[in-house]
Image 1 (cartoon, one colour):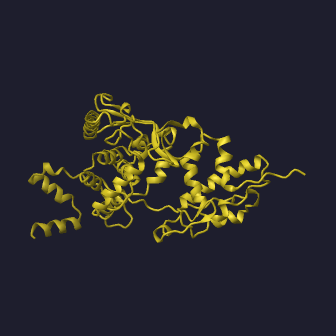
Image 2 (cartoon, rainbow, N blue to C red):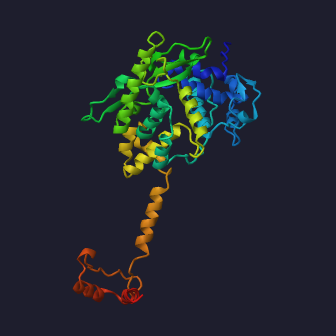
Image 3 (cartoon, rainbow, N blue to C red):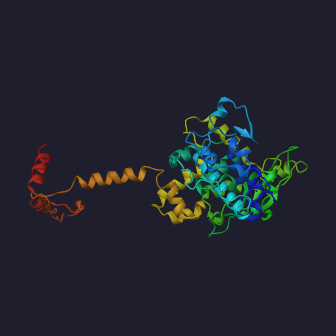
Length: 410
C-alpha cells in the first residue's frame, strides 16, 4: 500500500500556499508569522499528519510564550529582556489564519484527512493605542534635528503614512504643481526588508526592485514592493510647510551628489543617505529611538504610533468623516478605520458630556412636573434697552425674577 509523504509543519507556508496563492501571502508575512509559530516547539517541527487540534490549542494558551523561544525546533537561551517579549494576541490570531489556510490545502491535496485547526480562532485582546494629540505632535516635531528623520516624522504626522510607504517614495512621486499648486504625493510602493528564503517562494511581480546587499552573507534583502492593499495606493495633498521641506530635501540630495560624485550611488529613492544609498526601515527606526531617548518629556510611542496619532487627529478635524480620512490613511475600508480608531480618543466624548451638562441642567421644567418648558421669545443681548429689559422681566417666571433681583442688589 502506498504511504503518504510526510511533511514538517514548518514547510507549509513556503511549500504549499505559494503554489496556490503566491499573490496573497507576501515574504514578510511568512517570516513574521512563522517566527511566531516557531516559538512553540510543538508546532515548529511536528509532522503535519501527527499534529492534533489539542497541540494547536496549546499554542493559543492564555499565557503566551516568549518570542523566539524556539528556532527550527531548538530551544534558545533568552535574556531576561527577551523573555519579556511575549507573543501578542494579534500575532497568534494571524498564525491561526495562516495554519487554517495551509491545512485546508493539505486536505484538498490528500496529505491529511481532516484539518487539525481549531474551529474557533483565538480572540484578539484589543488594547487602547498610545497616541499623541496635535499639540504634542507639533512640539515633538520641532525638537527633531536630523533632517531625514524630521521629514519622515512630518510626513507620518500630516499624511498618516506607514514607515515603508515613506521610505518607498521616489522623487517622481512628488508633483509640486498639481492641485492648483498645492502639490501632491503619489503613494504606490513600499520599502521593506524581507527574508531571502521567503522571497524565493512568492510571486515575483510583487517586487519592483531588490537592492544590492551591503553585507556579505546577509540572509535578508531590502526590496521595493507593492503597497499593502489596493486601497493603499492613493494621492495625498501637501501642506505648505511640508512642501517647503520636501523642496529643501531635494536640494540637499543634489548637493550631496555634487560634493562627492565618485562616491555617490543614486538608489532612486526619495529618502537616501549622504552617499545616495537607501535609508532602510531599521535605520529610520534607530534614529527615531535615539531621538525618543533624548526627549523623555514626550510619552513613549513607536514610529507607527505617529500614523495612529495622525489618523485620530484627522478624524477629529473632519468631524468623524471616516470615508474622507480613509482616503488619506489607505485603510482597506472605512469600516476597518472605524473599528480601529473609534475609541482611541476621549476628547469628543468629553465635549459631548459637557454639552449635555450645560443643556440638561439648565432646563426650565415649569411648576408642573412632566410639563414641557415654556418657549420664551427673548431678545438678542445686543438689542437690550430699558423698554426691552422691562419686557424681559415680565416674561420671567417667579424663580428667574428672584434670581434677577438678587443679582441686581448684590
